Length: 456
Ligand code: SAH
Ligand code: SF4
Image (tube, rainbow, N blue to C red):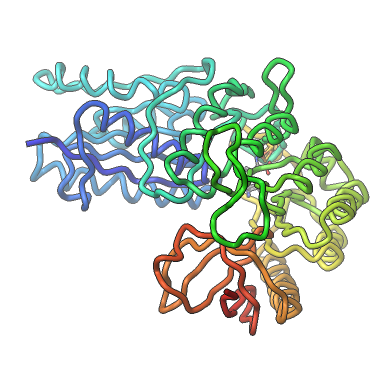
């Protein structure tokens, strides 16, 4: 019988995509996916360490492996990803979880298959395989196994060189390296050819993409050219044959952008590209220029607000979302109010709020003036309340408007999809519409959700 695997994923979309690679590697070695963790012969924990809460959750799940192994001694447990890649993390992890068979980091994930072979050879002696590479190698092409046939993640750049003072990512993902443009174009061409309708380009800072003479703006232009370019047909594209040899329209999104690198050229390309979603996720982190400086985010509050204005100049109804942190060391009430006022001024469609969390090894962890947890909670609660009202009010203004929506799935008697501006839209319709672009007139809203009727 074929062996089965089960992958547990923690953290960001990049990790979700890494897990698709893990599945691809395991499938290429003849394993198939298990429906339940209890049925698996190989269990993989693809970990995250961005905040302590993520780590606590993973520790909890790892401690359950001991029990699983009591009844299934052949079970192989793998811990990979960001948590073991943290400097000096391997030894304490091995000590705390001696029953985990393979521990690897982010830089050698592509060798998972080889490590599993070694484990099977070594089993008799009961030794595990533990290996962390201190630094990254060039971007490596590995097979990807996607569960979904409509939306796909595609890596374009790995690592991060920004070293924001609070963030562990540069220490666990290594230096920035761009994937060759030809490989990206090939992958996206193949995905569109297989009927995928939504592609999300991934990277910690997609705007610093560069492959020889190809910048991020060039890459977007070339990818845009792979799809049909006829807007307004509402039925999945009727444009002539394009560079990919298909006539399908598709929606291209990307994340994440760093405000310091988002150029006017990129904004223009997005505004003009028929296949480029009119939405940008642009993490601000704080509305106080003093805190931004301490965060090592090299822009000011004013620069950020001007950038938003520039985006809206080219795309007045662009969907804008952001990440914002409260309670960074030395954040005063006035700094926090600056963040609150920025949120009120910009009016994001969506805001992801975080409580600053100390990460050892980062500069901010050593800073004076760590903020009291109670104060942090009060601040985040205020921030969430303000954003909630903005989101709901803004959605209310969409009533009567028509949005083009990519139908993603059936949900509670509705068809759900997102507009080009990344607005969530629900309407009554047939399941056959899934995967199609349709026009919907908004009749009502609830929080940020829009409800409407499909137009013929
Ligand atoms: N590369 C992306 C974000 C990656 S991490 C960017 O620069 O925007 C995702 C989000 O987690 C960050 O935007 C930040 O808001 C949050 N984050 C990162 N480190 C954190 C920490 N130590 N405490 C709390 N939130 C953190
Ligand atoms: Fe972390 Fe900053 Fe890099 Fe984003 S840009 S991953 S927040 S260091």
